Length: 150
Image (spheres, rainbow, N blue to C red):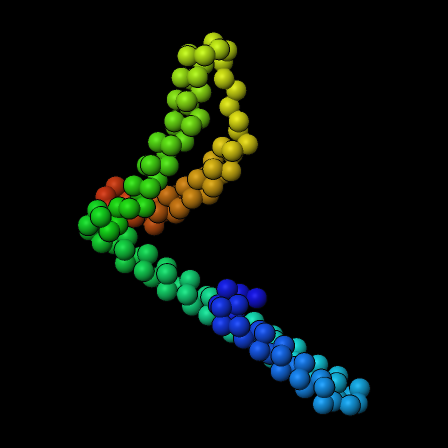
């Protein structure tokens, strides 16, 4: 069940109604018909919750677009700032710290734990695919809130 469905508790309501109805139904045919209706109601509920989740995602995307188009660095620049902070943290964790440890303590070349680095690299490569998309569209991404290049 979706987050919204859990929050609203509608799935539990449908289940509770079905349990009450089961107590008053006597024939197998009636039980089967009610079971079919209950499953239809649950599917309809799940479908509506998925639609609501999609609408929320679309609304968030629109907010992101407006935010990215803002000329203020404090509005549109927070995502790049977080990217730079993450890049600095990764540089420290996987380059500077092992080198400092190597020079200060044991004089053996450090071995990096790439199991932590690979998911980050692959995630960034997936995100970097958007830059290729921007190039194909002719979007000028050199400055925040830039208009597409003509």
